[in-house]
Length: 200
Image 1 (cartoon, rainbow, N blue to C red):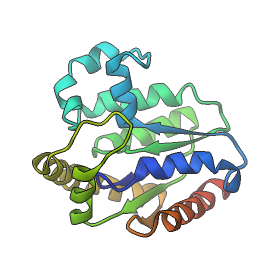
Image 2 (spheres, helix red, strand yellow):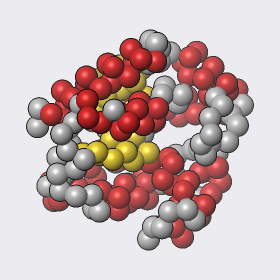
Image 3 (spheres, helix red, strand yellow):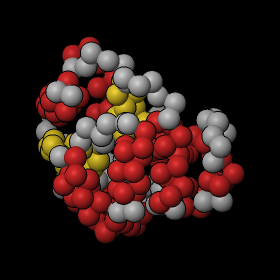
Image 4 (spheres, rainbow, N blue to C red):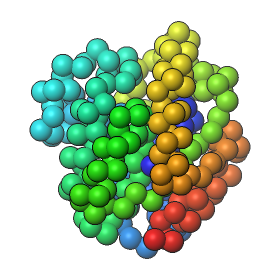
């Protein structure tokens, strides 16, 4: 599981990890960005049995706010059930709500999926807001105002920080300084991944 404040560079780390897969993993690896997948399902680009339910949350999704915790978990679970047994998945931006942690525990117990831990990409509040409002990228996120960036950060502090802390208590955690130079961040992230994935 890969977490961090808005703008921390979680998805960038995961994409670079896939591009440099041979440096840290022996098995196939995929990247599930929960936010991107949900937006893809709503747009019709990704098929899902939860599409109609997600369409009912279009306002929250468009504003990049949290949706119902159980629905978000169902989207993750649907993806994981179609992953081959020995594959590794970089779960980007999940869990975000406390209620999702026991759901992950039960899923791991019932399905045999191994949860290998958490990596948190850490940046300051000021850096998070600056990156959000200055973000220019060819992906699927809307423009972000200072007000929206501040709201997202407050939501992260209230909902996600306690969730990550609980997940780290259960499965262990690592920290990467997301404010270092890009190559340093990537190298540190890959080293942490290797420790988590290859030791299993």
